[in-house]
Image (cartoon, rainbow, N blue to C red; front, side):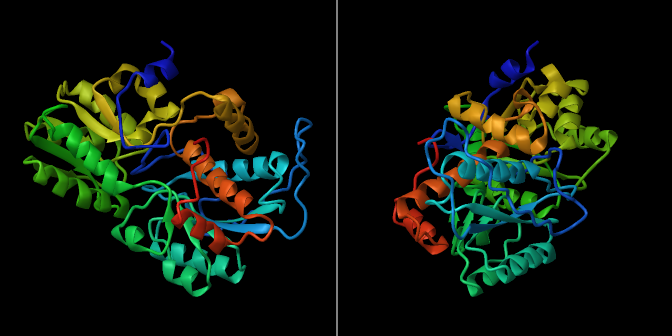
Length: 379
């Protein structure tokens, strides 16, 4: 069976945003950064324009983007964002003339999924006086430090309630929309019309935030929910026990808040235990490593969140640049999930910078987004 074609037949829930779906929860891939360090600063090389490019190469003072992304934590590991940011910056410098003629440089700081590491990253980038802070997925963004330093913030995925009220721009709707979409798909009579739900979860900050949105949404729709708690990571036997405990509540639907290895183990456990009720999880579980491992065990699951992977000329371009960053063949680049979002995020910022011109600043970029002048790449 062609697993990539099989994956495209699996149901994906979400809110369409210029052809891209809002994201929640977790994803795990091979990292190109040092997971043992809370800081990993990298300057993106200014690459030579391609032979087909007629745009002059960028010159002058670089436009410096400070990146904060979480990697290396058992419950939070998102290297696809970092890889996509690097790839997009290389493309911008090589073929698009930089940020309004100026070379773009990235100062990348890796958070470990703790408030202390997020604060350390914000302080480091503030000390470097970056022009703009770009957030991949950072659960504890230190908005106070960025604000005090006069550094505007643009992120991809708001996770905690504070993200929705922060002085920042987010290009997707985050948990508030995705968890609501999950609840609607489960409870709405137009879809499944189910009223008894078991939720398999843990106590990680991202999961607790998602639960804080999902549980009220289910209750508002008249559904009851039982939460089965596990650790941030489990053995295969542990995941199997969680599925068994969820099934023992006689639910009409099961929701898993786990990503990474939990995707594979819980899908397999559902089949082994002959659990027939529909199951819901996040689109991190659509990753190649997961679907290739579980095969037909993915049947019966619904995936809430983002769906990249729609093939196009831009997808081919993204594959080429990401492949160089991660040292793989373009065909082996997984375009589902956070790779696509990171690519779109960076190039959407570039579109706004181009319209502003050589005097572009971070504040001018965020002001343009707030004024409705910013549009997503590809839209």
